Length: 253
Length: 225
Image (cartoon, rainbow over all chains, first blue to last red; front, side, top):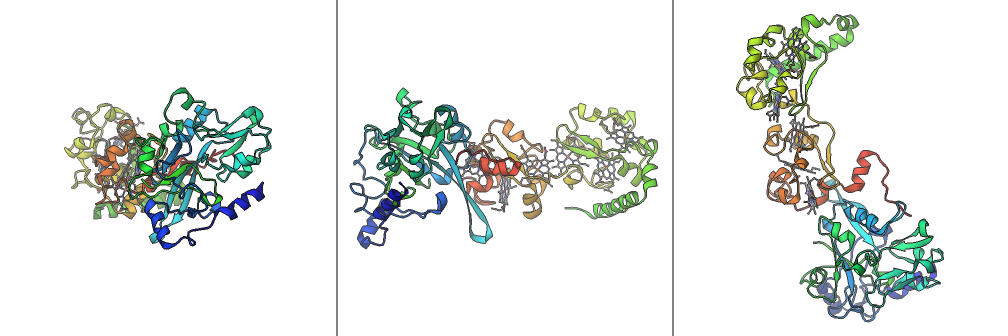
């Protein structure tokens, strides 16, 4: 399984250098610059059109979404103050034990000018990938991609606890829940909220800084759509080089 | 800010305390009848301030009656020989003192340093940073940085911008970014002119749950893996 990820990475990560300059400019115009060294030092990079298949880079072309509704979360990282109200709301809503998490906040410190240190907080959660490595490696189809919504969900009863999915996840977004002896993960509050008619996740609702914008990309009136397809907006994803095609987008403001 | 009187005074004090620590007998010899209660009196209402008998009696040589005089007490120009009486009047304020009442009888900038200066002599500057946990965890404020490094006077914040009491701002229910961006609280200076604007570099003021746990020395319960 580790092999598979490695192969994936080799296959998918061609980098920006190969792109003709015209293409590269097109990318930058679409706002697909990728930076940062979060998540264990993985250097993020652009995905090229060719390797991303039907998608043109991390952000799908407006109007071309594989799911309907196509749920996404846009994270305005620079607004996060690390208050973790999102995490608290998730824990209560989804009955998450203290030793695990469905979503968490990473903290990064970096040296800036004048010997000052800048702190950045970064919310992370399951990226509900279009090509989820976890789903590929699950031997019992306990974890699957919902055909309608694209949410990566769990059949808890089918899970044998082999934890292969946990190792395959590029985002460290799964944990083994002792209480039901199965792997647990974020499902955009599908069972606890969305399926009951709520329109947003518990974390997004709890966020006092409007950092987490949950929405349906097939709805051009949704805030998520408006943010992602605004003129001159730069959005990026985490670890695009794995080719998992994540649905969590990051941007500043 | 600190006038010469205070500097002289501080020197006297220093010599005095050196004498006391260097001579156990002097310590034992403290005469409550002659100098008044030995322990510092701490007022807590509405804010925290302290009063030391020894400084006023033993060191400066004031008589008990210069403060403890029933007629003066009635006029709020003196003090009862009982803790809490001045506070209970509800009028033990800087404004009253500036008009010559309570401590202001002498602390008028002439007989003794005035109440419009040297605030830190009577109100102790908090050493540790203040950390608020509401509305969100957590925002940090350092008196040390603002007063000692940046050089701001107490009056630039107290009491127009902030009450001299931790927790007063959150208790208003209006301690929010909207208020800051409207020029209240930190926003009185953090407006992009006097100091960096409140709607920029969020995590200079905010330290998050992680920073709060570190400051409190508790293990972060991030859980998992």
